Length: 214
Image (tube, rainbow, N blue to C red; front, side):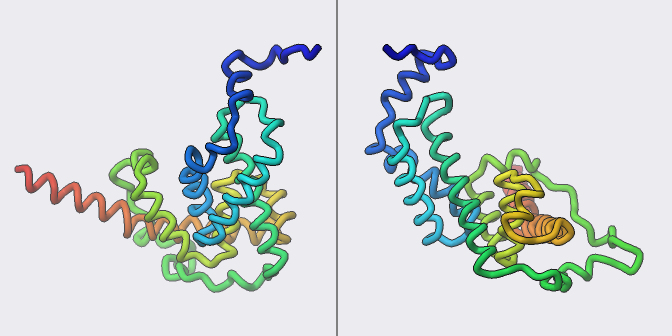
């Protein structure tokens, strides 16, 4: 006789028993696709990764213990698939130490360092509020698509997937110095793009709306 795991609540055990792979596409497909497309940029790649995730989940769904939600479990599998995708890209197209010496943002620096007059402005409306808006993530993806593929991959693994620095360097075959250079340039480029295409735009729209109501 199997003894129930005391670490599982009744609700969790019920969730585990009721896991139904036949409903996953309808219930979680759109969410998984949005998760993937923000990270890998290409729709066809995102679709393939979601399909691989669902197939992997179907093969192992009996291992789902219900300690987290079904969607969180699927996203965890998808996260691993995305990391594997970036590792594969790194093997196919090796990184070089010289590749990122040319900086499109070099005009923002002066001989003694950062030019503060050209630095980022304060974000309004509040950045936290933007994270809840679908339109913001569409703008973010458009900005991310403007980065070189390799820089975007490093940014996604570190900032979105929260991989450790050593893990990223090992997976992608780059030095820590290269990683920090790429992260810095990615952050600055994304910030500049979001300022121009989201925060200033939404601030202008809010101002125009306020004036119309006066």
